Image 1 (cartoon, one colour):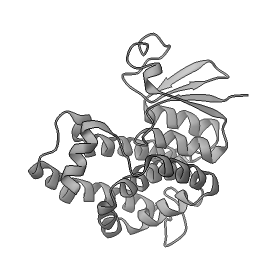
Image 2 (cartoon, rainbow, N blue to C red):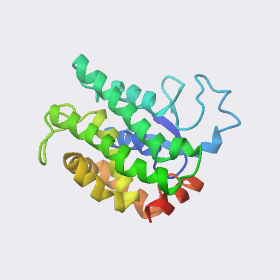
Image 3 (cartoon, rainbow, N blue to C red):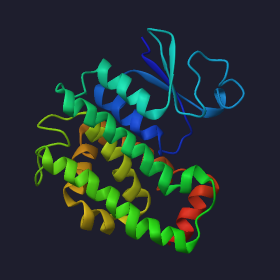
Image 4 (cartoon, rainbow, N blue to C red):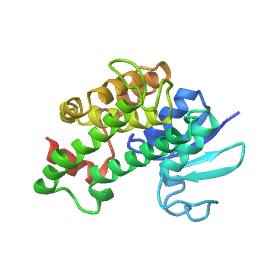
Length: 229
């Protein structure tokens, strides 16, 4: 029996946050193009959202929108949320931080294309600070060289989200790998370990074999590549 239908474009960006978790837990799901719902039908579904991703849960016949909300729902369903109140809250905070980084690296979701001056301010000021925030959070909760996780001794939704953010980023833009290694070496190692998990590795190998280093597509990605290359 099918568990979910995910509506998103083929490139990773926000979609991989959900896909990596679905692969990790062995959920049965179908991929559907974003155009199946967006934009014409998006306001006709129950619990609409502004834009993809949308997740349809078959057992409850319910749509979920907004990547952080979808991840929190799946985290509860599959017991990937920390038990303690503080770390439970930090898991949500980590996902929201990821969403903020996605917004910032695309210059507020493509509100304007990158120019050299504001790109350099982001890359050499804002992005390192974001990396350091993730690094400090992990170190404060037991992340060490080659072991541990973002919020304790157990893999959680925070680790999946962190790998979907930075693992995808440095694969799509290898020039940023040095930035991550310099500012968040333990996060870089964590991303590698999460991406090496069997189900996730198989998925990423297939995705990257098909789409190469594609990131978010369109003019936004063209603008990013112009700055980085």
